[in-house]
Image 1 (cartoon, helix red, strand yellow):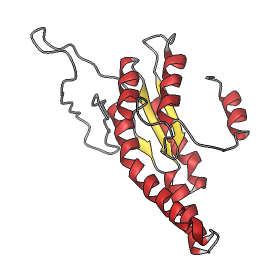
Image 2: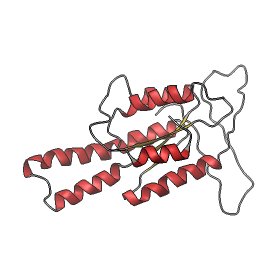
Image 3: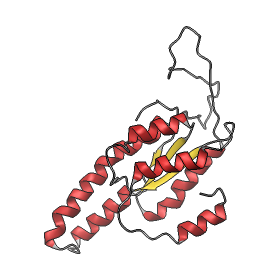
Length: 193
């Protein structure tokens, strides 16, 4: 893990995709290893690049990942390449680039990619983050830039609940006096995906 942009850029430039992903397991390991020693007064955000497909189901669930993120005060942002993959498969099928015997497998993968969008959205939003769905691979840079801008301009609001109120998440309402654009946006962790 690194916080240095140059090291990260170099590592990402040399990534080669292969095999399957363990999305939730990887996120949980990253949260535990990256943020265990990070001071509590520092921002904690995990940006996940994924198609949303998770090979290891069961114990490593989005709910468990959310719980671990929340207990470590980590916000999860997701950049999903699911729509990019979906359009690539659509093109391949339309151009008959897929063997007829494999066509049902490709169509099933497309259905699974589409189904996972709601899971990714719930995971990110439950921790106060969000998910970005670039339509084309050339939009990836814009997606990461939007998340970076959000992290730079983010404020944290907290409150102490009255002593007679049960522990846990509590709804709060925040209003601003600003009426002219840009209108501030708010995002909060819901506590569960």
